[in-house]
Image 1 (cartoon, rainbow, N blue to C red):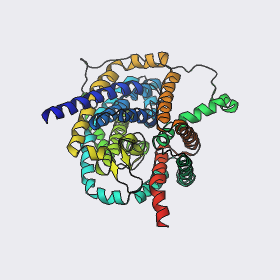
Image 2: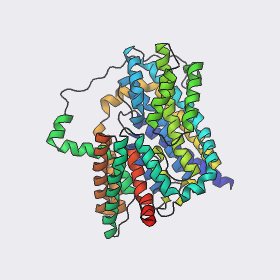
Image 3: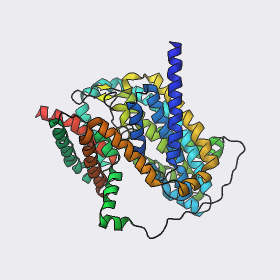
Image 4: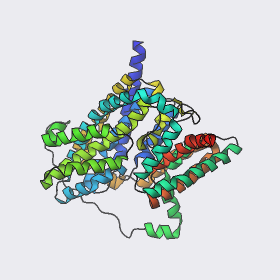
Length: 460
């Protein structure tokens, strides 16, 4: 038994280290969306047969590492590292204009590492408190998914337009399911991947159009100005509690604790709202900017951790924007992990790991991400940003993910799988760009189609 446990821990540590290294590097590349990167690679890890503990640490270490290094392009280059870095951009840009982007970066990364260690135990605690209601929630899963889809749609950028768009979006999914069923092909991963890379597919189709290509064309190369780096500590691993002052540490702890208790609301909305709360309590302009950046980047970590862990531990159902998006392979990745459409019964990490394992492996994942990403971002951020902006091809990264997604879709459903990805991606990408119908809402629309619609048909 001891040797089995040691083996599990070794696998979990190895996968967590891989996840931390891979996503620390991906976080340096501006505009790499979490769903487009985290979800497909986590799905690949699941389908390769990696043990449950390894899958969990890979995802969590990757998410934590990415939300540390996404601060590098946001603070130093003035372009968001990913979707959740967007609310940080304005304050980071102000500090960049003041000539202290390195200060902005250090506050952001230090806030992230503190919040991650706060969020894991609190998220597990809140999940355990909600777990007694898990069986009742599982039985009523079709109706909960329907209500959650409407709620998440309303709190997205699209508001009532997103709520209304749920209807045609669900109808398209049902129509595609009916079509593929005629050829004895049942797809699930292809829908998920199509939604995940929707904006990318929409951009690729836009480039094929002369009108769209003219709109996207630029007449000059984008230029960035990098301030010189200034190191204010000795050694390789700086103390985050010394990088942040006592007031900034308290606000980081407070906002991380608040965001660790919520799992239904949009992560971007939580980042904005809690950042505004912190900013309204501080008068001094410079101190307000640095404190808000530390707290907001901490919220990006805590919200991601809580929205993945609470639904996973308590219910086994993807009842949050993160759970339905980037963390979806932890819940539903047939044939290994499943959510039964008819009964709401689950077979995924919820059933394969206990509460103590989630806590232990969760802290291990955060520790690995901290060891890899934190000192790297603090010591080598300028050189890394310079290398990425000069040497790394965005087209190559996009092509890599496109190739991975094509392989997975053909594996699941041959030509039909590829057609479903193209259809869902194009529709979802256009709806996201034009109506604020984001990927989180689209994932909830998918679960509404496979869970809620059959229940509604049975009822009426």
